[in-house]
Image (cartoon, rainbow, N blue to C red; front, side, top):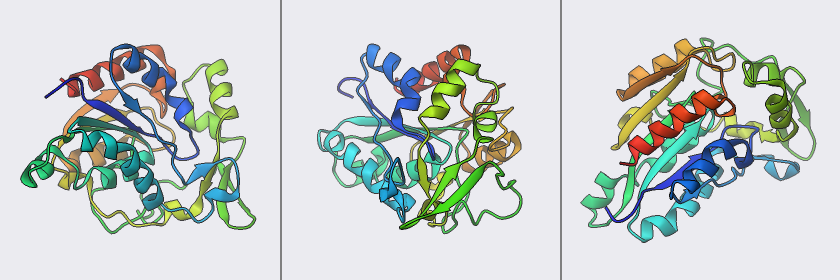
Length: 252
């Protein structure tokens, strides 16, 4: 391998890359190239309406392409909804698959943080079934298309154990999310990815309960690491340091 792997960060629904600066900045300081594309399904205007997770996959693919073309290795880090996007973005682009095509570079590892690492293809987040609690903290608004707006209850769920200052800052930057992104079907399961897989289970998560994260993690048959925290550990210093070390280890 020539140089450090490129880190590709895939953000969660309603969020923007800036929410992940506590991961991005230290990784850049450590000498990593960090690519954090903005999902097409989230944003601050009506342009998000109708966008599916496949539009987000296209954005991630476009961000990865120059690095893949240069033969670089990649570590994909995905949070929450980003797990759906990260899985479909990684499939077909792993080191193993590219090597079989006579190509250099590729995704060597994918890290899921409290993410939807779906155990089967052909299902959507909306179609996962009644097992996962439906959120009561997002409101729907219909204009020229369909998108979801978060209610005032959202920060208490998304940032349940984050201090008030960081929670307020994060909440102020939340965006609209395309409803269509929740109903588009996954093309691949996490378990079929031909790359090293790590799942960071956030045990006190009020958004995606820890038991469901554990189910996803066990189904994909990767490394499981548990953190005693809520849905957004990158706003807490101890957990952020742990995640940074996990990413750096995956890049070694």
